[in-house]
Image 1 (cartoon, helix red, strand yellow):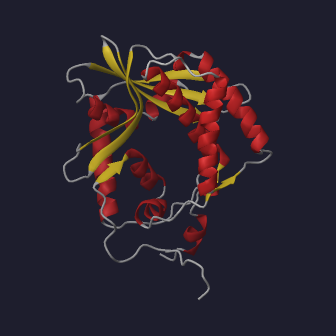
Image 2 (image 1 turned 120 degrees about the vertical axis):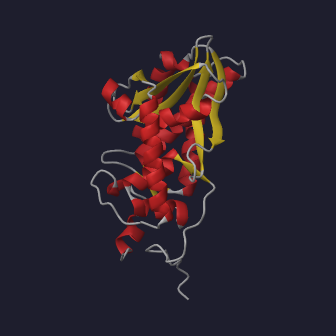
Image 3 (image 1 turned 180 degrees about the horizontal axis):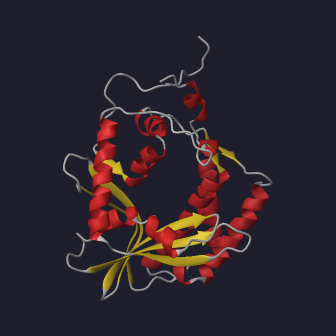
Length: 275
């Protein structure tokens, strides 16, 4: 006995583990790399190494979640120190679970400086002051949208309501500024979430938007709307149905990409995959 855990290097012949729900992130993972989907959602391999950029984005997200939860409870907006505390709580929690891989010319001090700049910009931006009443922060909704496909499980960053509409906001951090075309091209997730949210207030107009903060020397916080388009919702439903059919048929294979492989937490088992 060597004491080493033998990692599964290729999908088994047996049927994959059944899931009674599907998330948009899982669908996106399969589209990015079917083998990554297998390792993460079926084999359940732990993520041993994660890029600092991803951890930074998640920790900023946690700080924003803390901010909006305080507002929803009727408390004053948290100050910078409180937001940084929420940021570091999330960072340290993730650091206990995985090895964080820093980028070139990057270290924990640069991460601290970046977090401070981003959260100052967030606090001073209109993103921190939502219009209307906050109905949900990290709200979890679940429902069947496509016959034969498991329920769609969504965690929606922010839901607000005014007399005129319900607004679904998804928060993103980005290495560069977005534009309207990029927001529209990324809108499938919000469009699907709108199908779940509209059940909360039938007949009410739904607004969709991304709130994007850049991870740059001078961060920028911006809102980018997404057009509500029933035809795109129908198309996205078809895509998800076909992806799920491929998952059910155990169609798993690597999809090498210079954009994705470098930061993938499953590089070692992927290299051992034999087909």
